[in-house]
Image (cartoon, rainbow, N blue to C red; front, top):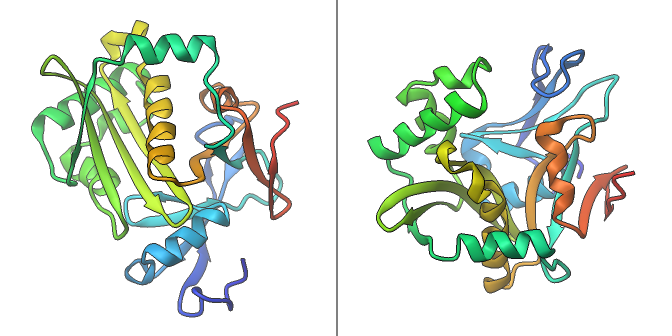
Length: 241
């Protein structure tokens, strides 16, 4: 991607100040951000995703760290993916969940689940203190084709996934779930469900954001092989070794 090529002629890119890396404690991070947000429509956003960007609310960014290349954008090859035995058990265990597509509206029940999830999984990380405004900016603000998927188990809210649709696939924005159901591997099920959704929509890829080999939070993504990584400006099969 070059910023003078379509559809980027009117989009500008700036670098943030350095900040503490969320995944590698010894690193300082920096991001490249695409602006202005109102010009990043579905076509431009699709191209940015293919160039390794991600979205947080209305901000589209990618890591731009001078001395570190640990963040590797990854995507699942939907046509080639086949669940392993553990993943098949996960699909069977959660097959009774009822999935429903919703607009990006604020619901107290969703926000309460979000707070419980962060309090259990990311306590002390800062996000666990997010109020309704931060939650809305993070997950309910979008200029592109975004849907919220609500998963219920016999009426009880179990999980929420926020997903973007782009030209050549789906992009997994964020998933949160009932932390008391750890035995059900809902996070795994959420990814498997999105892979199947992409297959039904005849879209070739599910974009999973960044894989970081040294980060326990991110290393799990290699479970969804065959995985491709954006390395040296080219999407290619990812070798976790």
